[in-house]
Length: 324
Image (tube, rainbow, N blue to C red):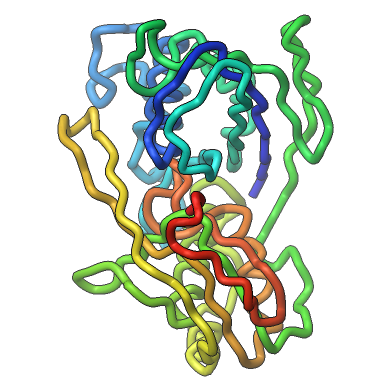
């Protein structure tokens, strides 16, 4: 699967009032801006539009249908969007002129070809502003630069992009590692549904199940098909991995859904957890999960998982530290 991580560096031009979690705001504003750019039939609803099969906005934000040419195993996957927005992790709500505002856009598969459209959409977002309306309007910002792997790929003065080809990643891209103790952090709320509810704890096998589901869906929809993984064997062996330390807790946050015209409470697990056991064979999948996010709500940044260390982390961050 082709993969690109594009870091947008911006600065606010006037005061801004944003919610505690910025991912939903960014996703909503990006969708509105992209639709303004590419929509040819402005008053046509997307599901009924004759142009939807060729529309970039529909492919990125609206399409939830599996391609009829997809392999039969795809019937068991849940459609997902070909992008993730990694928001700034600060819980600050108030921003002032000249304060930085950076976020990352992850693109999967063919969505990488649409990067110029995303860039133009972000510039339009900056002009329209984000968050609640203030005396000077919403929080307008200016896009200063875009980087990929530490290199500049966008010149705002010349309005040109230096295209850097996306990487090709698979769950088995990394070699197995020697690892017997692993600490990971859930940087943004992780929402994993099991049976009739959401998990409020994270046994290792549920983390692996989520990683396998994500890898399968992304590679079938946007890559080269179902990856060659030992699904049953990995899950079975994951059940033998022990949890030796955890400060995971449930964090609730709200977003406003324009589609449903109501506020929605979305919660998930955040914090740190340490596992112990023969972890080496699982490390490629966990490193893959670091790059693509897990669970529900990934398009606005939920399920952001990072590996901290192969030793237990003693410096545990309290729940009200100012970051997720």
